[in-house]
Length: 372
Image 1 (cartoon, rainbow, N blue to C red):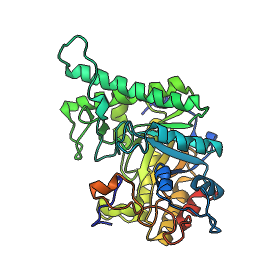
Image 2: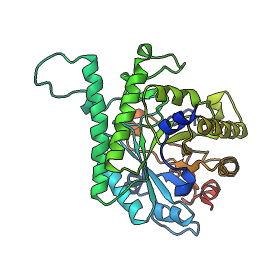
Image 3: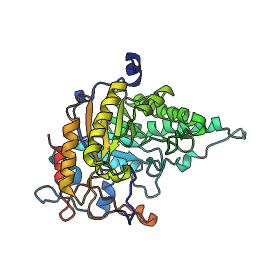
């Protein structure tokens, strides 16, 4: 999904074994999670979070108190503000680890948000040493970017390991429906027309596999997630193509924003949830791997309906033995707060948080999500 709101709008057994080698998600326990990547910047800005009794508390701690057991943190390569770069991610990872929370690391492989609308190559990856003075070919560029993905992934994870922190999951890319590291790893345009006669798929698979191998080199038992948007769509075709091009993953992660049916032709949230259920079943039948919702969001201004949406999602998915859990995307954003980088871009505040605007407490939807 887009990470902003504009101011004016508010196969066979062989296939199964080749694709996924990790145990079923339920063996490790259900993830009651949240992406809290903006948290340190909010704290810098003086945002106060309160528990259900109205007492001020550190956000991870108070969410743990209502059932959250997992935290997701994004990593940008070199964002100009410093937020969500490696040092900032480590601050939050240390805190999550000290609380005994399970951890997901979400690599964006970009200096800013990577999603279906942008997958920009990090600036420092666009140049490299050229000691022989020869002109760099297209193949050289792909080889270079593949090494960058591997090296960056490995360095970040080694930094966590040096802290004694072991993530349970790692995403190699964020919402990569159209590939990553555009234009080199762009697979299709938004009408699913192949880019560069399908060469983008091969490049995308190389990048994904480089990240996958780096993850397992540092943490052999980590669960590597391939993440795309729109859980309500038939996504089997996507993973068949990625598999055909040699891409690897252990788990599939999907984004699901059921109250934003207007983006999808006005589909009601009930139907969005039912389509997500059917498509998750189809993915598991095709590839045999565990699946989770790496992102979900509702609407801050309508907590009652949001609670119904979350309850319905869980009723549809929790009974699936291979379903691994749900991460709410930035629930702690409320009352119009927006990050520093949004201001010069003219972007409005994210309005799908799950804290009460007036009090800074978790709302009914978030309590429902974390209930267990």
